[in-house]
Length: 420
Length: 205
Image 1: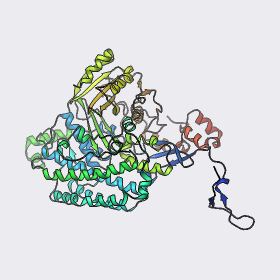
Image 2 (image 1 turned 45 degrees about the vertical axis):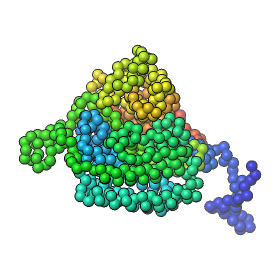
Image 3 (image 1 turned 60 degrees about the horizontal axis):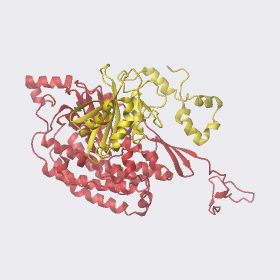
Image 4 (image 1 turned 180 degrees about the vertical axis):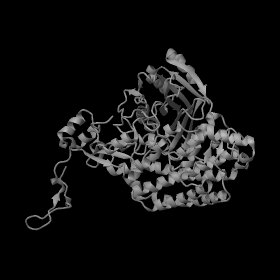
């Protein structure tokens, strides 16, 4: 290899004998070729999306090995769940994947209902679909915004967060909270949607595609974006399956598996939407998949609003659903039910249930084991971003350090869920 | 009941225990020394093809008499069918099963988590370290039923250990050797690292 002609001016060059700034040609630097460097990234680093710590072994600028360190946000949710009634666990699910709290609430409630054999009402089913798809949009918007910032594009971040804010306002209308929604209950919802919610959401579904089109125009054929993402961190379909990836990560590699289509829950099979599948499995395809999933989520939202039936939100089972306050205060039987539910909780029969739902990050599984008491023996969250992240060392090998940022962003991790 | 349960019994006979159904899911209990064989067969046999590992976890019951279970949730992506395979281990005895990382790379972190939380050792795992708790965590295995909710050590001891954390322990020996920083460490620190005592406090419980 010929010596490089570009000269490097050192930060503190000093002066030579003639008083000129010292310039050191690159080739004259001490040989670093065989020496591998250790770079510590995080846990307090903006591009690690929370408190992920990566110890990176570098050969020059090329990543040789990535050693992730997790657990900085470990809260022991699964252990806490063993000491709580089923309905008391729902607030914990908010705090796992805190970028899509409503979808987590739904996932847990579905598992608890499967365990107890409860069939929810038609209105509740549609409301839960709305909750899941709203979560998908806000989660993907956060992903788009933060990833574009990681790769140096600031404008899409602002657009994406503006849309997220509109969903958050609706979420606040419905649940009273923007982040810690706790919107479901075993057998129903915490509350029905308020007046004006349907109009607000309909207005959102009408205008949201414009923002997506703007983001698409600014990024999809942008030379910098394409250059930073195409061919970076690619996984084949076989590798994606072998690494147990799920969600957009799996589909970007060309595996058309979507829990909503393939093991439907909440009547998803009756909605008209497409499963978005990529081809190359690189960062760019993951971007395209998530962008298109926003369109599909918007389609589902519009259909759900059209079909939203009237009727009760909660099942008519006084063993699992609290009676209205007015009845609990005036009616002896209702008061007893209220007392028993609050003090003893809802008992689940002996058995176990696993329900996987298609969360924005991938397949969120809730696995509940019951020994017949009101508290689960074991509550296991199958965390999609934890499992997707486990493929990061493989994806980043051989790429540049700057590509590691893009690859890490493309996994769409949320540390609350990775560490639980 | 999932048809794979009968097929498994026909192939592996005594290595397959009972097959039960719970909430519509089929659960097959298998002998703890045949995990790798059974799961490889399930993955590769045409007509079954459980090629996707959904989850690896463990369950310990409140009833101390019941065995600790390691749970494998596998899925056939082509046939859209799930199957749950369980291995029973004696919680008082040797908690060891074969690692399934040779079959699925995705099991790597999942098994590390089970090791971290339950203390199950996975034979043949390429990198069996704690994953969510820190490497020098000495209070035991948090998801075991004999582990109190607030931890095993007193709050005072937990605080003392947190304050006395050794900053040198932020990199493993392996990581330090990458950076060649190992050679520059003081002699006593090198000696402790060699003995695998990194981060360990001189007077901890």
